[in-house]
Image (cartoon, rainbow over all chains, first blue to last red; front, side, top):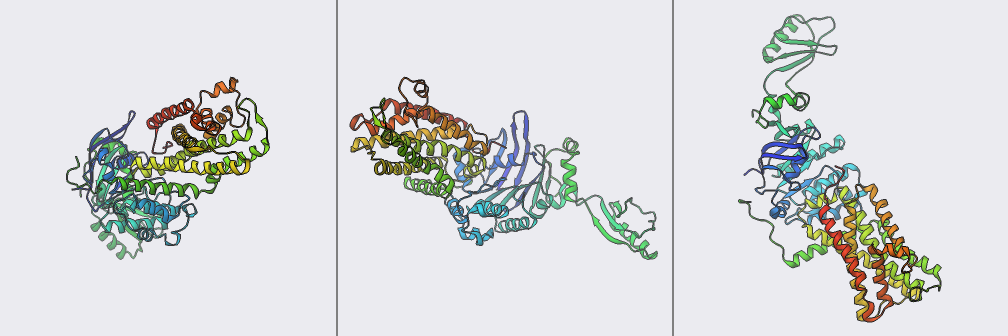
Length: 314
Length: 271
Protein backbone atom coordinates (compact mmCIF):
# COMPACT_ATOMS: atom_id res chain seq x y z
CA UNK A 1 0.00 0.00 0.00
CA UNK A 2 1.48 3.39 -0.96
CA UNK A 3 1.84 5.91 1.89
CA UNK A 4 0.03 8.53 -0.16
CA UNK A 5 -2.21 7.98 -3.14
CA UNK A 6 -3.85 10.88 -5.00
CA UNK A 7 -6.12 10.54 -8.04
CA UNK A 8 -7.63 13.46 -9.92
CA UNK A 9 -7.42 15.90 -7.02
CA UNK A 10 -9.22 19.21 -7.60
CA UNK A 11 -9.56 22.21 -5.33
CA UNK A 12 -10.84 25.62 -6.41
CA UNK A 13 -10.86 29.00 -4.68
CA UNK A 14 -13.66 30.92 -6.31
CA UNK A 15 -13.10 30.59 -10.03
CA UNK A 16 -9.40 29.72 -9.66
CA UNK A 17 -8.51 26.04 -9.83
CA UNK A 18 -5.57 26.00 -7.39
CA UNK A 19 -5.22 22.24 -7.78
CA UNK A 20 -6.46 21.02 -11.12
CA UNK A 21 -6.50 17.27 -11.53
CA UNK A 22 -3.37 16.16 -9.69
CA UNK A 23 -2.44 12.48 -9.42
CA UNK A 24 0.59 10.86 -7.82
CA UNK A 25 1.65 8.16 -5.40
CA UNK A 26 4.24 8.21 -2.65
CA UNK A 27 5.65 4.81 -1.74
CA UNK A 28 6.29 4.00 1.90
CA UNK A 29 9.86 4.85 2.91
CA UNK A 30 10.33 7.22 0.00
CA UNK A 31 11.31 10.90 -0.03
CA UNK A 32 8.92 12.64 -2.41
CA UNK A 33 9.36 16.27 -3.45
CA UNK A 34 6.64 18.48 -4.85
CA UNK A 35 8.60 21.11 -6.75
CA UNK A 36 7.08 24.26 -8.16
CA UNK A 37 6.99 28.04 -8.14
CA UNK A 38 5.04 30.04 -5.56
CA UNK A 39 1.30 29.76 -6.07
CA UNK A 40 1.56 26.52 -8.05
CA UNK A 41 -0.67 24.61 -5.63
CA UNK A 42 1.96 22.89 -3.46
CA UNK A 43 0.70 24.03 -0.08
CA UNK A 44 -2.95 23.49 -0.98
CA UNK A 45 -2.14 19.91 -2.01
CA UNK A 46 -0.22 19.26 1.22
CA UNK A 47 -3.01 20.79 3.33
CA UNK A 48 -5.57 18.52 1.70
CA UNK A 49 -3.39 15.49 2.47
CA UNK A 50 -3.03 16.65 6.09
CA UNK A 51 -6.80 16.86 6.41
CA UNK A 52 -6.59 20.60 7.09
CA UNK A 53 -8.39 21.57 3.90
CA UNK A 54 -11.26 19.96 2.01
CA UNK A 55 -11.21 18.97 -1.66
CA UNK A 56 -13.70 19.47 -4.46
CA UNK A 57 -13.00 16.24 -6.32
CA UNK A 58 -10.62 13.32 -6.48
CA UNK A 59 -9.68 10.29 -4.46
CA UNK A 60 -7.09 10.69 -1.70
CA UNK A 61 -5.65 8.14 0.72
CA UNK A 62 -2.99 8.96 3.30
CA UNK A 63 -1.70 5.93 5.20
CA UNK A 64 -4.87 4.20 3.98
CA UNK A 65 -7.10 6.88 5.48
CA UNK A 66 -9.25 9.42 3.64
CA UNK A 67 -8.04 12.74 5.14
CA UNK A 68 -11.41 14.31 4.31
CA UNK A 69 -13.15 11.94 6.73
CA UNK A 70 -13.34 13.78 10.04
CA UNK A 71 -14.13 10.65 12.05
CA UNK A 72 -10.68 9.18 11.41
CA UNK A 73 -8.96 12.56 11.68
CA UNK A 74 -7.38 11.92 15.05
CA UNK A 75 -6.18 8.48 14.01
CA UNK A 76 -4.54 10.02 10.93
CA UNK A 77 -3.00 12.98 12.76
CA UNK A 78 -1.43 10.73 15.38
CA UNK A 79 0.65 9.14 12.58
CA UNK A 80 1.56 12.38 10.78
CA UNK A 81 4.33 14.85 11.41
CA UNK A 82 3.90 18.34 10.03
CA UNK A 83 6.35 21.19 9.60
CA UNK A 84 4.61 24.30 8.34
CA UNK A 85 5.97 26.96 6.06
CA UNK A 86 5.72 29.59 8.78
CA UNK A 87 7.69 29.17 11.97
CA UNK A 88 5.26 28.30 14.75
CA UNK A 89 6.84 27.91 18.17
CA UNK A 90 5.77 29.24 21.59
CA UNK A 91 8.25 32.02 22.44
CA UNK A 92 8.24 31.84 26.23
CA UNK A 93 8.59 28.10 26.82
CA UNK A 94 11.95 26.33 26.72
CA UNK A 95 12.94 23.93 23.94
CA UNK A 96 12.46 20.97 26.26
CA UNK A 97 9.08 22.20 27.55
CA UNK A 98 7.67 22.68 24.05
CA UNK A 99 8.86 19.25 22.92
CA UNK A 100 7.58 17.54 26.06
CA UNK A 101 4.20 19.21 25.71
CA UNK A 102 3.76 18.10 22.10
CA UNK A 103 5.13 14.60 22.75
CA UNK A 104 2.20 14.12 25.10
CA UNK A 105 -0.27 14.54 22.24
CA UNK A 106 0.92 11.35 20.50
CA UNK A 107 0.31 7.70 21.39
CA UNK A 108 3.94 6.56 20.87
CA UNK A 109 6.25 9.59 20.80
CA UNK A 110 10.01 9.70 20.46
CA UNK A 111 12.00 10.53 23.56
CA UNK A 112 12.38 14.27 24.08
CA UNK A 113 16.15 13.97 24.56
CA UNK A 114 16.45 11.87 21.42
CA UNK A 115 14.68 14.60 19.43
CA UNK A 116 16.86 17.32 20.96
CA UNK A 117 19.89 15.29 19.83
CA UNK A 118 18.50 14.75 16.34
CA UNK A 119 17.96 18.48 15.80
CA UNK A 120 21.28 19.34 17.45
CA UNK A 121 19.90 21.65 20.14
CA UNK A 122 21.50 19.98 23.19
CA UNK A 123 23.16 23.26 24.23
CA UNK A 124 19.87 25.14 24.01
CA UNK A 125 17.58 22.52 25.55
CA UNK A 126 16.62 24.72 28.51
CA UNK A 127 16.76 28.07 26.75
CA UNK A 128 13.56 29.97 26.03
CA UNK A 129 12.50 29.60 22.42
CA UNK A 130 12.60 33.36 21.82
CA UNK A 131 16.33 33.43 22.58
CA UNK A 132 17.09 30.98 19.74
CA UNK A 133 18.37 32.13 16.35
CA UNK A 134 16.07 31.81 13.34
CA UNK A 135 17.84 28.68 12.20
CA UNK A 136 17.64 27.09 15.65
CA UNK A 137 13.91 27.87 15.86
CA UNK A 138 13.46 26.28 12.46
CA UNK A 139 15.22 23.15 13.73
CA UNK A 140 12.95 23.10 16.78
CA UNK A 141 10.03 23.38 14.37
CA UNK A 142 11.29 20.25 12.61
CA UNK A 143 11.74 18.63 16.03
CA UNK A 144 8.05 19.27 16.76
CA UNK A 145 7.27 17.61 13.43
CA UNK A 146 9.07 14.40 14.36
CA UNK A 147 8.44 14.19 18.12
CA UNK A 148 5.34 12.06 17.52
CA UNK A 149 7.47 9.47 15.69
CA UNK A 150 5.39 9.86 12.51
CA UNK A 151 5.07 7.27 9.76
CA UNK A 152 4.71 10.15 7.31
CA UNK A 153 6.35 13.55 7.64
CA UNK A 154 5.17 16.62 5.69
CA UNK A 155 7.76 19.35 5.25
CA UNK A 156 6.40 22.50 3.63
CA UNK A 157 9.43 24.40 2.31
CA UNK A 158 11.62 23.22 5.17
CA UNK A 159 14.74 25.23 4.35
CA UNK A 160 13.31 28.52 3.12
CA UNK A 161 15.21 31.25 4.93
CA UNK A 162 18.00 29.02 6.24
CA UNK A 163 21.68 29.75 5.60
CA UNK A 164 23.68 27.17 3.61
CA UNK A 165 24.96 25.43 6.76
CA UNK A 166 21.45 25.24 8.19
CA UNK A 167 20.18 23.76 4.94
CA UNK A 168 22.85 21.06 5.03
CA UNK A 169 21.92 20.21 8.63
CA UNK A 170 18.26 19.93 7.68
CA UNK A 171 19.10 17.77 4.69
CA UNK A 172 21.15 15.44 6.87
CA UNK A 173 18.19 15.16 9.23
CA UNK A 174 15.78 14.34 6.40
CA UNK A 175 18.18 11.68 5.08
CA UNK A 176 18.53 10.19 8.54
CA UNK A 177 14.76 10.03 9.04
CA UNK A 178 14.32 8.51 5.60
CA UNK A 179 16.99 5.90 6.30
CA UNK A 180 15.04 4.94 9.42
CA UNK A 181 11.96 4.32 7.30
CA UNK A 182 9.99 7.55 7.70
CA UNK A 183 8.18 8.50 4.52
CA UNK A 184 8.87 12.15 3.77
CA UNK A 185 6.83 14.40 1.52
CA UNK A 186 8.29 17.83 1.03
CA UNK A 187 7.54 20.90 -1.02
CA UNK A 188 10.27 23.18 -2.24
CA UNK A 189 11.13 25.65 -4.91
CA UNK A 190 14.83 24.83 -4.67
CA UNK A 191 15.99 22.53 -7.45
CA UNK A 192 19.12 21.43 -5.59
CA UNK A 193 17.03 20.47 -2.57
CA UNK A 194 14.76 18.22 -4.62
CA UNK A 195 17.80 16.74 -6.37
CA UNK A 196 19.70 16.15 -3.13
CA UNK A 197 16.88 14.62 -1.12
CA UNK A 198 14.14 13.16 -3.24
CA UNK A 199 13.71 9.68 -4.66
CA UNK A 200 10.79 10.99 -6.68
CA UNK A 201 10.02 14.52 -7.84
CA UNK A 202 6.79 15.91 -9.19
CA UNK A 203 6.93 19.33 -10.80
CA UNK A 204 3.72 21.25 -10.32
CA UNK A 205 2.75 24.42 -12.18
CA UNK A 206 -0.61 26.20 -12.19
CA UNK A 207 -2.22 23.37 -10.25
CA UNK A 208 -1.12 20.60 -12.60
CA UNK A 209 1.72 18.12 -12.48
CA UNK A 210 3.82 18.73 -15.57
CA UNK A 211 6.54 16.13 -14.98
CA UNK A 212 7.17 13.35 -12.55
CA UNK A 213 9.96 10.86 -11.95
CA UNK A 214 13.31 10.32 -10.27
CA UNK A 215 15.29 13.60 -10.30
CA UNK A 216 18.07 12.15 -12.47
CA UNK A 217 15.75 11.37 -15.38
CA UNK A 218 13.09 14.02 -14.89
CA UNK A 219 11.81 15.49 -18.13
CA UNK A 220 14.09 13.12 -20.09
CA UNK A 221 17.21 14.90 -18.87
CA UNK A 222 19.22 11.66 -18.90
CA UNK A 223 18.57 11.38 -22.61
CA UNK A 224 18.87 13.72 -25.55
CA UNK A 225 21.51 16.25 -26.30
CA UNK A 226 24.54 16.88 -24.12
CA UNK A 227 26.51 20.10 -23.88
CA UNK A 228 30.33 20.07 -24.05
CA UNK A 229 31.94 23.25 -22.70
CA UNK A 230 35.62 24.20 -22.79
CA UNK A 231 37.99 27.13 -23.26
CA UNK A 232 40.38 27.64 -26.16
CA UNK A 233 43.58 29.70 -26.21
CA UNK A 234 43.22 33.11 -27.87
CA UNK A 235 43.44 33.14 -31.63
CA UNK A 236 42.74 29.43 -32.13
CA UNK A 237 39.72 28.49 -34.22
CA UNK A 238 38.00 25.14 -34.18
CA UNK A 239 37.88 22.93 -37.24
CA UNK A 240 34.52 21.81 -38.60
CA UNK A 241 32.93 19.47 -36.09
CA UNK A 242 29.65 17.58 -36.41
CA UNK A 243 27.89 19.66 -33.75
CA UNK A 244 25.97 22.84 -33.08
CA UNK A 245 28.72 25.26 -32.00
CA UNK A 246 28.24 28.43 -30.02
CA UNK A 247 31.00 30.50 -28.51
CA UNK A 248 31.29 33.48 -26.24
CA UNK A 249 34.22 35.14 -24.51
CA UNK A 250 34.37 32.61 -21.68
CA UNK A 251 33.82 29.34 -23.44
CA UNK A 252 32.90 27.32 -26.47
CA UNK A 253 29.77 25.16 -26.29
CA UNK A 254 28.99 22.17 -28.46
CA UNK A 255 25.56 20.60 -28.41
CA UNK A 256 25.32 17.03 -29.59
CA UNK A 257 23.58 13.76 -28.93
CA UNK A 258 26.78 11.83 -29.83
CA UNK A 259 29.11 13.27 -27.26
CA UNK A 260 31.55 10.35 -27.13
CA UNK A 261 32.41 10.55 -30.81
CA UNK A 262 32.61 14.31 -30.69
CA UNK A 263 35.01 14.20 -27.74
CA UNK A 264 37.16 11.76 -29.65
CA UNK A 265 37.29 14.10 -32.66
CA UNK A 266 38.00 17.05 -30.42
CA UNK A 267 40.81 15.30 -28.55
CA UNK A 268 42.48 14.08 -31.71
CA UNK A 269 42.41 17.56 -33.22
CA UNK A 270 43.75 19.15 -30.05
CA UNK A 271 46.59 16.64 -29.68
CA UNK A 272 47.61 16.81 -33.34
CA UNK A 273 47.73 20.61 -33.33
CA UNK A 274 49.08 20.89 -29.80
CA UNK A 275 46.11 23.05 -28.68
CA UNK A 276 45.53 23.34 -24.93
CA UNK A 277 41.88 22.82 -24.05
CA UNK A 278 40.91 23.83 -20.51
CA UNK A 279 37.86 23.69 -18.29
CA UNK A 280 36.27 20.81 -20.16
CA UNK A 281 32.80 19.76 -18.95
CA UNK A 282 30.12 17.51 -20.35
CA UNK A 283 26.60 18.02 -19.05
CA UNK A 284 23.02 17.26 -19.83
CA UNK A 285 20.04 19.38 -18.78
CA UNK A 286 20.33 20.48 -15.20
CA UNK A 287 17.18 20.00 -13.16
CA UNK A 288 16.93 23.76 -13.28
CA UNK A 289 16.78 23.70 -17.11
CA UNK A 290 13.98 21.16 -16.94
CA UNK A 291 12.17 23.07 -14.21
CA UNK A 292 12.34 26.43 -15.96
CA UNK A 293 11.28 24.88 -19.21
CA UNK A 294 8.30 23.20 -17.54
CA UNK A 295 7.18 25.97 -15.20
CA UNK A 296 8.34 29.08 -17.01
CA UNK A 297 7.10 30.65 -20.23
CA UNK A 298 6.91 27.25 -21.88
CA UNK A 299 4.72 25.72 -19.20
CA UNK A 300 1.45 26.52 -20.96
CA UNK A 301 2.58 24.95 -24.19
CA UNK A 302 3.95 21.94 -22.39
CA UNK A 303 0.71 21.39 -20.54
CA UNK A 304 -1.38 21.46 -23.68
CA UNK A 305 0.94 19.12 -25.52
CA UNK A 306 1.44 16.49 -22.89
CA UNK A 307 -1.14 14.91 -20.68
CA UNK A 308 -0.79 16.48 -17.24
CA UNK A 309 0.61 14.03 -14.78
CA UNK A 310 2.02 11.74 -17.44
CA UNK A 311 4.95 9.98 -15.85
CA UNK A 312 8.37 10.78 -17.19
CA UNK A 313 10.47 7.86 -18.42
CA UNK A 314 11.87 6.14 -15.38
CA UNK B 1 -13.61 3.73 4.61
CA UNK B 2 -10.17 3.25 6.02
CA UNK B 3 -9.99 -0.47 5.42
CA UNK B 4 -6.61 -2.04 5.84
CA UNK B 5 -5.40 0.04 8.76
CA UNK B 6 -6.18 -0.81 12.33
CA UNK B 7 -6.91 2.15 14.60
CA UNK B 8 -3.78 2.73 16.61
CA UNK B 9 -5.36 5.32 18.87
CA UNK B 10 -7.46 3.50 21.40
CA UNK B 11 -10.36 5.60 22.67
CA UNK B 12 -9.22 7.28 25.87
CA UNK B 13 -11.02 6.62 29.10
CA UNK B 14 -12.81 9.53 30.78
CA UNK B 15 -9.92 9.68 33.25
CA UNK B 16 -7.43 9.78 30.38
CA UNK B 17 -9.37 12.60 28.75
CA UNK B 18 -9.41 14.56 31.99
CA UNK B 19 -5.67 14.02 32.44
CA UNK B 20 -5.06 15.32 28.92
CA UNK B 21 -7.12 18.45 29.67
CA UNK B 22 -5.34 19.10 32.97
CA UNK B 23 -1.97 18.57 31.31
CA UNK B 24 -2.84 21.09 28.61
CA UNK B 25 -4.16 23.54 31.25
CA UNK B 26 -0.76 23.26 32.94
CA UNK B 27 1.04 24.19 29.72
CA UNK B 28 -1.46 27.00 29.03
CA UNK B 29 -0.72 28.40 32.50
CA UNK B 30 3.03 28.03 31.99
CA UNK B 31 2.76 29.86 28.67
CA UNK B 32 0.80 32.67 30.29
CA UNK B 33 2.89 33.20 33.43
CA UNK B 34 6.26 32.85 31.66
CA UNK B 35 5.41 35.93 29.62
CA UNK B 36 6.02 38.51 32.36
CA UNK B 37 4.71 41.55 30.50
CA UNK B 38 1.45 39.82 29.61
CA UNK B 39 0.99 38.39 33.09
CA UNK B 40 1.65 41.68 34.91
CA UNK B 41 -0.42 43.68 32.45
CA UNK B 42 -3.41 41.34 32.79
CA UNK B 43 -3.30 40.53 36.49
CA UNK B 44 -1.57 43.59 37.96
CA UNK B 45 -3.80 46.19 36.37
CA UNK B 46 -6.94 45.36 38.31
CA UNK B 47 -5.08 45.43 41.64
CA UNK B 48 -3.33 48.68 40.72
CA UNK B 49 -6.67 50.30 39.80
CA UNK B 50 -8.32 49.30 43.06
CA UNK B 51 -5.39 50.52 45.17
CA UNK B 52 -5.22 53.87 43.37
CA UNK B 53 -8.96 54.50 43.17
CA UNK B 54 -9.61 53.14 46.65
CA UNK B 55 -6.94 55.41 48.12
CA UNK B 56 -8.16 58.53 46.32
CA UNK B 57 -11.84 57.83 47.05
CA UNK B 58 -11.22 58.08 50.79
CA UNK B 59 -14.51 57.80 52.63
CA UNK B 60 -16.73 59.34 49.95
CA UNK B 61 -20.07 57.68 49.44
CA UNK B 62 -22.40 57.16 46.50
CA UNK B 63 -25.71 58.72 47.44
CA UNK B 64 -27.61 57.14 44.51
CA UNK B 65 -26.29 53.61 45.12
CA UNK B 66 -27.57 52.56 48.55
CA UNK B 67 -25.20 55.25 49.92
CA UNK B 68 -22.29 52.73 49.90
CA UNK B 69 -18.70 53.89 50.22
CA UNK B 70 -17.14 54.33 46.78
CA UNK B 71 -14.51 51.71 47.52
CA UNK B 72 -17.29 49.23 48.22
CA UNK B 73 -18.26 49.72 44.60
CA UNK B 74 -14.70 49.61 43.29
CA UNK B 75 -13.74 46.23 44.78
CA UNK B 76 -16.58 44.23 43.15
CA UNK B 77 -16.32 46.49 40.09
CA UNK B 78 -12.69 45.64 39.54
CA UNK B 79 -13.28 41.98 40.33
CA UNK B 80 -15.64 42.09 37.36
CA UNK B 81 -12.99 44.03 35.44
CA UNK B 82 -10.34 41.41 36.27
CA UNK B 83 -12.52 38.59 34.97
CA UNK B 84 -13.34 40.54 31.82
CA UNK B 85 -9.72 41.53 31.18
CA UNK B 86 -8.61 37.88 31.41
CA UNK B 87 -11.55 36.45 29.49
CA UNK B 88 -12.20 39.14 26.91
CA UNK B 89 -9.14 41.33 26.46
CA UNK B 90 -6.33 38.85 27.08
CA UNK B 91 -8.06 35.91 25.40
CA UNK B 92 -9.00 37.85 22.27
CA UNK B 93 -5.44 39.14 21.85
CA UNK B 94 -3.76 35.81 22.57
CA UNK B 95 -6.06 33.91 20.19
CA UNK B 96 -5.18 36.36 17.39
CA UNK B 97 -1.45 36.03 18.14
CA UNK B 98 -1.63 32.24 18.22
CA UNK B 99 -3.67 32.13 15.05
CA UNK B 100 -1.51 34.55 13.08
CA UNK B 101 1.78 32.99 14.17
CA UNK B 102 0.61 29.55 13.04
CA UNK B 103 0.44 28.06 16.55
CA UNK B 104 -3.26 27.24 16.26
CA UNK B 105 -2.78 25.61 12.89
CA UNK B 106 0.02 23.48 14.27
CA UNK B 107 -2.19 22.39 17.20
CA UNK B 108 -5.00 21.62 14.76
CA UNK B 109 -2.63 19.31 12.87
CA UNK B 110 -1.61 17.47 16.03
CA UNK B 111 -3.77 14.68 17.42
CA UNK B 112 -4.82 16.87 20.38
CA UNK B 113 -8.64 16.86 20.14
CA UNK B 114 -10.19 20.26 19.47
CA UNK B 115 -12.52 20.05 22.43
CA UNK B 116 -9.55 19.31 24.72
CA UNK B 117 -7.77 22.41 23.49
CA UNK B 118 -10.90 24.56 23.81
CA UNK B 119 -11.78 23.39 27.32
CA UNK B 120 -8.15 23.81 28.40
CA UNK B 121 -8.09 27.38 27.12
CA UNK B 122 -11.38 28.19 28.90
CA UNK B 123 -10.26 26.57 32.16
CA UNK B 124 -6.93 28.33 32.00
CA UNK B 125 -8.67 31.66 31.41
CA UNK B 126 -10.90 31.07 34.46
CA UNK B 127 -7.79 30.27 36.53
CA UNK B 128 -6.13 33.55 35.53
CA UNK B 129 -9.36 35.38 36.40
CA UNK B 130 -9.60 33.49 39.70
CA UNK B 131 -6.05 34.53 40.67
CA UNK B 132 -7.08 38.17 40.27
CA UNK B 133 -10.31 37.69 42.22
CA UNK B 134 -8.40 36.23 45.16
CA UNK B 135 -5.88 39.10 45.07
CA UNK B 136 -8.63 41.72 44.87
CA UNK B 137 -10.67 40.16 47.68
CA UNK B 138 -7.55 40.22 49.87
CA UNK B 139 -6.65 43.82 48.99
CA UNK B 140 -10.27 44.89 49.49
CA UNK B 141 -10.55 43.13 52.83
CA UNK B 142 -7.20 44.10 54.35
CA UNK B 143 -6.51 47.49 52.78
CA UNK B 144 -10.01 48.95 52.55
CA UNK B 145 -12.14 46.91 54.92
CA UNK B 146 -14.48 45.73 52.17
CA UNK B 147 -15.93 42.41 53.30
CA UNK B 148 -16.41 39.70 50.71
CA UNK B 149 -19.81 38.03 50.32
CA UNK B 150 -20.47 35.91 53.38
CA UNK B 151 -22.46 32.79 54.01
CA UNK B 152 -22.91 29.78 51.76
CA UNK B 153 -25.44 31.48 49.50
CA UNK B 154 -23.41 34.69 49.15
CA UNK B 155 -20.25 32.77 48.24
CA UNK B 156 -22.17 30.48 45.90
CA UNK B 157 -23.71 33.51 44.21
CA UNK B 158 -20.28 35.11 43.72
CA UNK B 159 -18.79 31.92 42.27
CA UNK B 160 -21.69 31.29 39.89
CA UNK B 161 -21.71 34.91 38.70
CA UNK B 162 -17.94 34.87 38.11
CA UNK B 163 -17.88 31.50 36.31
CA UNK B 164 -20.86 32.26 34.06
CA UNK B 165 -19.56 35.77 33.46
CA UNK B 166 -16.07 34.45 32.77
CA UNK B 167 -17.32 31.92 30.23
CA UNK B 168 -19.60 34.48 28.56
CA UNK B 169 -16.82 37.04 28.22
CA UNK B 170 -14.46 34.31 26.99
CA UNK B 171 -16.98 33.58 24.22
CA UNK B 172 -17.06 37.33 23.50
CA UNK B 173 -13.25 37.36 23.45
CA UNK B 174 -13.05 34.51 20.95
CA UNK B 175 -15.78 36.12 18.83
CA UNK B 176 -13.81 39.38 18.97
CA UNK B 177 -10.67 37.57 17.81
CA UNK B 178 -12.45 36.50 14.62
CA UNK B 179 -12.97 40.17 13.73
CA UNK B 180 -9.29 41.10 14.04
CA UNK B 181 -7.21 40.74 10.88
CA UNK B 182 -3.65 40.66 12.25
CA UNK B 183 -1.40 40.64 15.31
CA UNK B 184 -0.61 44.35 15.16
CA UNK B 185 -4.29 45.27 15.34
CA UNK B 186 -5.11 42.84 18.15
CA UNK B 187 -4.05 44.95 21.16
CA UNK B 188 -5.28 48.36 19.98
CA UNK B 189 -8.64 47.12 18.61
CA UNK B 190 -9.54 44.93 21.57
CA UNK B 191 -8.42 47.42 24.21
CA UNK B 192 -10.25 50.29 22.53
CA UNK B 193 -13.53 48.37 22.42
CA UNK B 194 -12.97 47.13 25.98
CA UNK B 195 -12.09 50.46 27.61
CA UNK B 196 -14.74 52.49 25.79
CA UNK B 197 -17.40 50.01 26.93
CA UNK B 198 -15.95 49.98 30.45
CA UNK B 199 -16.22 53.77 30.58
CA UNK B 200 -19.78 53.73 29.22
CA UNK B 201 -20.65 51.09 31.78
CA UNK B 202 -19.57 53.19 34.73
CA UNK B 203 -16.65 51.17 36.02
CA UNK B 204 -14.81 54.26 37.27
CA UNK B 205 -17.92 56.26 38.25
CA UNK B 206 -21.08 54.39 39.17
CA UNK B 207 -23.90 55.39 36.80
CA UNK B 208 -27.11 57.07 38.03
CA UNK B 209 -30.01 55.00 36.86
CA UNK B 210 -32.01 56.90 34.26
CA UNK B 211 -28.97 58.84 32.99
CA UNK B 212 -28.09 58.70 29.28
CA UNK B 213 -24.99 56.60 29.91
CA UNK B 214 -26.99 54.20 32.03
CA UNK B 215 -29.50 53.79 29.19
CA UNK B 216 -26.74 53.19 26.62
CA UNK B 217 -24.86 50.77 28.85
CA UNK B 218 -28.02 48.69 29.33
CA UNK B 219 -27.53 47.31 25.84
CA UNK B 220 -24.05 45.96 26.58
CA UNK B 221 -23.10 43.13 28.92
CA UNK B 222 -20.42 44.89 30.97
CA UNK B 223 -22.67 46.99 33.24
CA UNK B 224 -24.92 44.00 33.90
CA UNK B 225 -21.90 41.93 34.90
CA UNK B 226 -20.58 44.64 37.24
CA UNK B 227 -24.06 44.95 38.76
CA UNK B 228 -24.32 41.18 39.26
CA UNK B 229 -20.93 41.05 41.04
CA UNK B 230 -21.74 44.16 43.11
CA UNK B 231 -25.03 42.64 44.25
CA UNK B 232 -23.27 39.61 45.76
CA UNK B 233 -21.32 42.08 47.92
CA UNK B 234 -24.11 44.51 48.79
CA UNK B 235 -27.04 42.14 49.30
CA UNK B 236 -26.38 39.36 51.75
CA UNK B 237 -28.36 36.14 51.65
CA UNK B 238 -30.85 35.03 49.06
CA UNK B 239 -31.16 38.45 47.44
CA UNK B 240 -27.48 38.26 46.39
CA UNK B 241 -28.68 36.94 43.00
CA UNK B 242 -29.06 39.50 40.25
CA UNK B 243 -30.85 37.07 37.99
CA UNK B 244 -31.87 39.33 35.11
CA UNK B 245 -28.44 40.97 34.90
CA UNK B 246 -26.75 37.57 34.82
CA UNK B 247 -29.21 36.35 32.19
CA UNK B 248 -28.35 39.25 29.88
CA UNK B 249 -24.63 38.49 30.27
CA UNK B 250 -25.22 34.82 29.44
CA UNK B 251 -27.35 35.70 26.39
CA UNK B 252 -24.51 37.88 25.10
CA UNK B 253 -22.17 34.97 25.73
CA UNK B 254 -24.39 32.52 23.87
CA UNK B 255 -24.70 34.83 20.85
CA UNK B 256 -20.93 35.36 20.90
CA UNK B 257 -20.33 31.61 21.07
CA UNK B 258 -22.50 31.15 17.97
CA UNK B 259 -20.53 33.87 16.14
CA UNK B 260 -17.23 32.34 17.28
CA UNK B 261 -18.20 28.84 16.12
CA UNK B 262 -19.27 30.20 12.77
CA UNK B 263 -16.31 32.45 12.09
CA UNK B 264 -13.40 30.78 13.85
CA UNK B 265 -10.27 30.24 11.74
CA UNK B 266 -7.28 28.05 12.60
CA UNK B 267 -4.93 29.33 9.94
CA UNK B 268 -3.48 32.83 9.71
CA UNK B 269 -5.85 35.18 7.90
CA UNK B 270 -3.01 36.98 6.11
CA UNK B 271 -2.34 34.10 3.73
